[in-house]
Image (cartoon, rainbow, N blue to C red; front, side):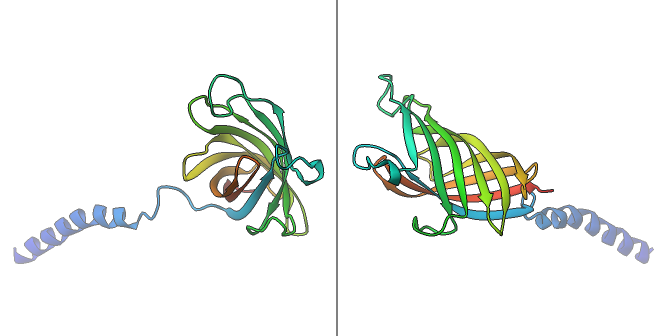
Length: 183
C-alpha cells in the first residue's frame, strides 16, 4: 500500500512538473532565421544643398502636396549604395533600387518598395523588400517578399534602425535582414 502511495505521488509530481518544464524550454515564439545579414543603406537626396547629380543617389520625382506638413505625396526614386559598415565610403556590397513615398499627412512615414541587388563573390541575386516605414519609431519591420539567385524565393523581415540623418538630404539605415525561408 505504501508503495502505491509513493507511485501515485510521483505520478502526480510528473503531471504537475511537466507542463511547467515544457513551457520554460520555449526560447522564442519565432523560429530561428535560416540566414541573417546586417547591412547599411545610404541615401543621398538631390536637393537644396546637394545639387550635384553625380553625388546624389536619389531624386524627388513629385513635390509634396499641400495636404499636410510632412512631405505627404513626395515620391523619391533611388539607386543607393549598401555597405557592410556605417561608412558611406566603404565599398558597396549591393545596391538598393526602388522608391519610397511619403504616405502620411499627420506624421513622417514612408512606404518603401525596393530590391537589394547583389553582384559580388559573396552573394549574387536580389532580395525584394516592401512595407511601411513610420520614421518616428526606433525600429521598423518591413517584409522580405521574394528574391532571386542566392536568395531564391526568400521570405522574412528587415528591421530598419535609423543611424544618421542630415536634414532631409542624407540618411543612413541599419538593415537587419532575417530570412525564414531559404532554398
